[in-house]
Structures are given as structure tokens and as C-alpha cells.
Image (cartoon, rainbow, N blue to C red; front, top):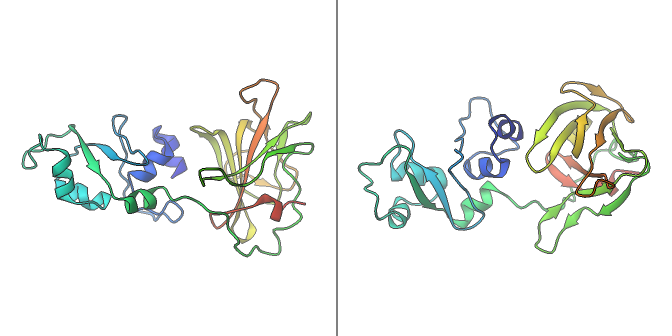
Length: 239
């Protein structure tokens, strides 16, 4: 889903929220996704802004977003449901369950790790942790953030294959590496990636140069480890 969002220039969170019936971690060949337009919005709370598509009915829209045709009609009293105009923007009130399903709040995972996932080297040779992995004050899970020292090269921490190397909105250039036993590592806020998709890497392979953040003198790397898509505290894996 990240690659689709990047390809079509759509914020990945909006793409997820417009497709509440799609499991982003288990997408199937042949599944059809609704691609939101630039005019459409999907806030974390409140009503969605939805643009009528050919063949739409309030019932069809309601079924997609797990709401009711009556709720949509109530929010759009000026719209005649029998003569929906393609391209017109309407309000779609969605239930809390739809919002949660579309944008789940990740939690720290105590999932059992494979024997191979231990004593991995740190991605920055002289970096220091400026933000630990864990939930912030709002209960949102935050990945680990590392401040680079003189050596600003981020390196692979285990053997694997590069599955993504490109730009993602709000994260800059990102590199995602898949490892044995369904482990993944994510490097974000990179400069130009030093690897390409499909490339085999080994521990120590340069992945990217860490890009400068708000202050040009600071170079921070967002580093994430996952097991089958579930977030894992890097301190459980790194030596």
C-alpha cells in the first residue's frame, strides 16, 4: 500500500482510510482499491469528504465505509439520492469501527522472535538514541529515532533483500529490507538511497546517508524493526 500511495501521490493514511476492507499487511492479487482524489478527505474523526463516482448509490457508499445509507442521507439533505451527480462532494459519516479498521493504532509487540533476530549491529556506528521506541503521551506508537554522529551512513543490520527504496510522504526517502523469518527493518529520513529494490544486502551494507532534519547540523534516522508487520522494540534485537 505504501508503494501504491507513493505511485499515485496519495498520503498512505488517506489511502488506508478509504479502503477499510483491505488489510494493508495482507493484500491479495486482484483486489481493487478505491483511490481517493485530491478533493477527498478522511479525517481521524468526523465525516469523510467523498466524491461521487459512476454507479454510486448511498447504499453502495455505505457498504464500502461500513456505515448506513440513512446516515449518509441525513448528512446530505440537499442531495437527491436518486440523481447523484458524478464528481459532487458529499459528507460520509463513518463509525468508530471503520476508523479503527482503516487506521489501526499499533501497539508494542511481545511477539516471539526467531533465534536469528538477536545481536544485530546498530544501523549507525556512532549514533545515539534521541527517542526510544514506545507510545507517546497520546498513546501513539513511535519508532526509535537515532541521531547520527560523524559517520552519517546508515547500514543494514542483517542479511536480506531490499523490498522498497524510494520516497514516502512525511518520511522522506525510505528503505525497507526483508530478512529471514519474516523480519523487516525500515530506514526513514534518508538521503538518496544507496541500494535498489531487489538488491541483496549483508550486515554493514550501506543503505543510505542520513538526511539533515530541521537543523542542518542534525542528521536523524527513524529506524523500525518488525516481525510479520508487528512492531518490535529494536533493543530486543540490536546488540
